[in-house]
Image (cartoon, rainbow, N blue to C red; front, side, top):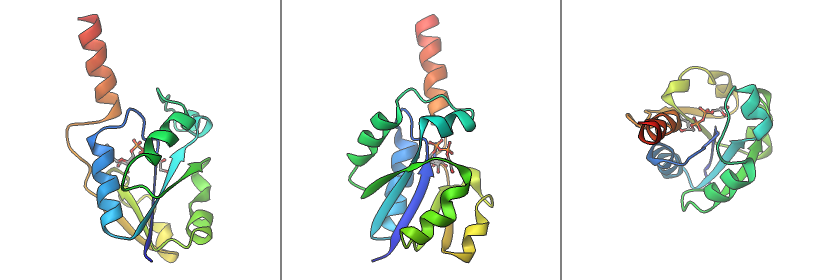
Length: 132
Ligand code: C2G
């Protein structure tokens, strides 16, 4: 069984998230998603609309996702790859090169981001709609 892992906040779920989850699952048999905790989001200077528990419940409902674990810090990836016996690490290519150190432990794949959608764009567009 080929195991895949990917990491992210996955707030205000959108087709960009779904596209990467679908493609990540397609290159393996089992997909683990490590979702950033609320505390780690603060470290990433991100304020998610949905709490970790809400984002976890949403991700667990997606057909491509087999397991959701928490992401608490930048340093846990090597341990996660070893502990979960991961074969492939996947991230969007906005992160290209940033996690190449994992090549010592598993395959590293950066997939093209979905153009034109992001959680930030959703928030901006909604603000414009509501505030005119
Ligand atoms: N993504 C994408 N296309 C978009 C938006 C996001 O492919 N239009 C991908 C990102 O490249 C990432 C994943 O969806 O691989 C999750 O994106 P975010 O929730 O924004 O995660 P991020 O803040 O990049 O956190 O340790 C890694 C970090 O936790 C990544």
